[in-house]
Picture 1 (cartoon, rainbow, N blue to C red):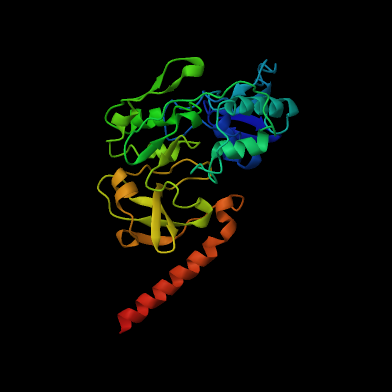
Picture 2: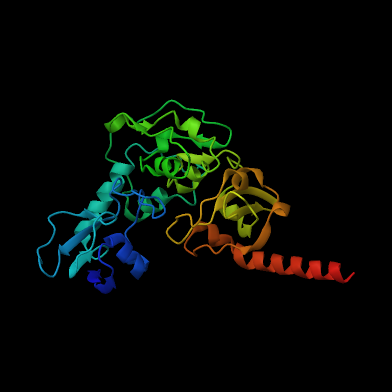
Length: 323
């Protein structure tokens, strides 16, 4: 075991634990933001640099500070290490610069993007971004690519986090896409259209932190804050069958995997559950999905209303059974 101090809070964790995962054990505001790291996907992380932290003391044996910010998702802790995240003004300024780079080519189309309301980049820009941009050149654009009737690809919004590539590589039986070219011309290959035939390809939508990969079956139907997220499950031979139903009235507008407090899917789901089961009768409704109160999705207070609706449904079922 090794002791590490993050923003003045000391914690003891197993040796080899990364700074990011040590911070997640503490929780709260000391946890660095992430855009590419995904704990459920092996070898993820190290691409976006949003999780950078300042190591003001390398270890108890070598107290010298590390000369520059390091990616917390890839840096293992050392016994006696002292890390600064939100307590370092210099680090926050450096992270602001990283966010500025991420937004250089990202289009400002939040009003029409289906990811609005649950976009990690939107949240990151609000917390660490600048009000304006210093970039004077034309934004990067790509030709539109049709990758099927289920998934919409917008390469102009892509920040090259590699998460979708990891999904195709680790959850499907073969990978037909990846990042092509270099530098400003880098893009997800058009061969992504071959990967969507796999039963687990829809998980690329859930792991995408921006609006680069969205659900065509949900496209322009509603904003997420006008829907009611409900936990539900069904018996499925391909996956766990544990999902979130996004309802509007009696209609199921979309189905997604259940995400934890860090926006990571708890259990990946198959395409049959995601795209083919869009009726409430297909599912066993467990109750309203708990959404963090800071999220715009929670602003309609759907949780208490959802519980009331569920209680009424149970009472009606009991009355029907008595008759």
